[in-house]
Length: 229
Image 1 (tube, helix red, strand yellow):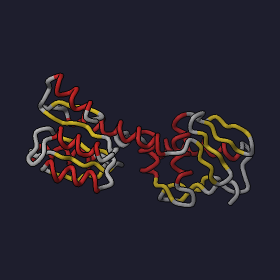
Image 2 (cartoon, rainbow, N blue to C red):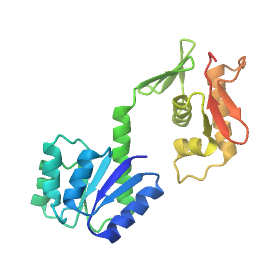
Image 3 (cartoon, rainbow, N blue to C red):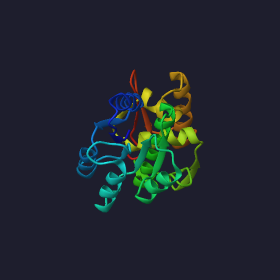
């Protein structure tokens, strides 16, 4: 989930974009004026801004110039009907991170925002996670258990990462399915259970352990408790 500021004076387009982003789990704030949009971007804690060019109060180029001169680092995706190459180059020169010409497919816009969100997440998150006596190396995609490296396939790795980031807290089956397969996937609960069983075997050893590293919370989901708890 990312916090998105949409600066767009066409309310129909703004509401369409808002609905599409919210349906994919993002938070959205709308602004219909360039001056207001620039102020919100400078004052707010936004992960991404979507910016039209032709705006009342202050056009998109001036918004770009203003916020970048104030060292605002929020990624900005320009949304506009202006498709002239010199204007596109001007937007990038002023600090735009991406450019999408109207009319655009909503699915493409959502995908672009998702890509920005993943880049932000990759920058923000540490490459090594340590919790409950287990170390997870995101670069090598291995877990280190009792000093030994354990290779995990992609889905098992992603499931374990979600659980370890929420150590001691219950993670629902729905959240785990979304992490491993995506929010649009139709994955049966017992498929998830099979993956968790395989993950447990690798973390606890084939002979089992004195307690579960990943605890089942019946009817809800799973909880990572680690080897030392």
